[in-house]
Amino acid sequence: MTNRQILQAMSGLMAGMFVAILAGTVVANALPTIIADLEASQSSYTWVVTAELLAMTATVPLWGKLSDLFDKKLLLQLSLGMFVVGSLLAGFSHDVELLILSRVVQGIGAGGLTALAQVVMAAIIPPRRLGKYAGIFGAVFAIGTVAGPLVGGVLVDTSWLGWRWCFFIGVPFALLAIALLQRTLSLPAVARREVKIDFLGAFLIVAGVCALLIWVTLAGNEFDWASWQTAALTGAGVLLLVAAVFVEARTAEPVIPLGIFRNRTVTLTTVASLLVGVAMFGGTVFLSQYFQVSLGKSPTVAGLMSLPMILGLLVSSTVAGQVISKTGVWKRYLVAGAVIMTVGLGLLSTIDADTSFTLLSAYMAVLGIGVGMLMQNLVLAAQNDVPASELGAATSVLSFFRSMGGTIGTSVLGAILANRVASEMTKGLDAAGIPAGGDGGGENSVPDMSTLPEPVRQIVEHAYGVATADLFLIATPCALLALLTVVFIKEKPLKTTSGMERLAEEAATAKETDKTAVGS
Image (cartoon, rainbow, N blue to C red):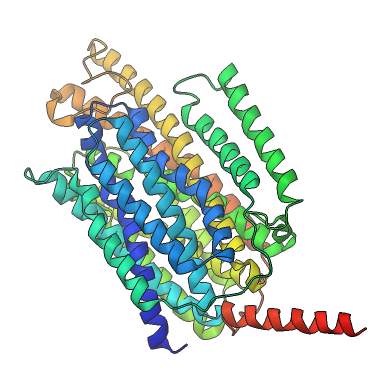
């Protein structure tokens, strides 16, 4: 395919990815307002974020496997349709329970977009050329991430629109993506000798992952870490996943082919993706809350404050992608990205309610540069080292573990944040001689800063500043482990044929082998 044909085919993919990114980022600055308006708690704040991540995490392997069996374009359009349904449900929510349910539906759709967009890219673009186009996706990611918080902040601050439009606004983009995919994306049908969907394995994987993620979300908040609920959820999760491994090892078309983990590159990039998810998503998801609660900024200003991190990500992903496509050398950028990401998280662990915006911007830019060099190129390394017939499974496995890391990070760090804020506020209120309950709604609620008296406001700002810094301090060792994992990845030359071309070659080779076997 020529560059023009590839860009035309990618237009619908980029629109779909923009929708998926917008779904998360447009809500970021609106969440404090949404939670306060629905009179929900700090744990609900975490659940609104976690519900989408959990649903996306649990379904990514299923979408990836389906892409190896069925029409990829139809699956992409189906995932976008689910996103539309989830967005409409979220926009019309009048309680936090329905909002969380709608985020689950959005997460299922986002899981399809996350897995399938990268699978389709690998199918039509050779790994040697993929870096350049991955840089374009990085630019779309950056634009969506920048535009989302800004648009969300403006919508929340505009009285005649409000936070509900944070969900409605993604619907026309999703419908546009469906139309563009229908018009521009053309993939040849690949005949398969046998098509079987491993429903039992899929159920066991989803159930086991959900049990463990629900445990890390609720433990330390709804019940103690050492409790019978912990034993029940972890025990059930482990048993379900052990059963899933048993089933996957014996089925003809497993959801996650266990054989791909014999590939050293896939195993190491999977571990690194999990750790990047914990460090990146777990650490940064609460930044908007820090901007608004601890620094006292409006939703719109909070969106603008995230620009340094996004610009760092945009520049590094685009430049690294172009250089990798030109030179074919990629490992040094993985290592450099992991080093810079670790440094960025370490710097952000020093922030508090009095940190200047100049320092904060520099720290966020460092983190963005590191993530931009690392995250997308992990996928490139894995896709380059697997047979074309396993591109969908390998890509979805990496997305699955990155999403699972993000969900674990958000859940665990969210619980830590709530407990740290509560203890800091109690300490501050006691020192100031203010009775408990004078903090604007209780220990577990997200306070409405505009209603707080000045002494209490300062205590709350300090509490959220200290607690947010702690989250980055906890995320830093995860980034360091990701660095150690990346160091052991072996660099291999990037292939010059696309996934479709490799699949045709593999099919021809298999046919010749069969003929030889019959002849002998």
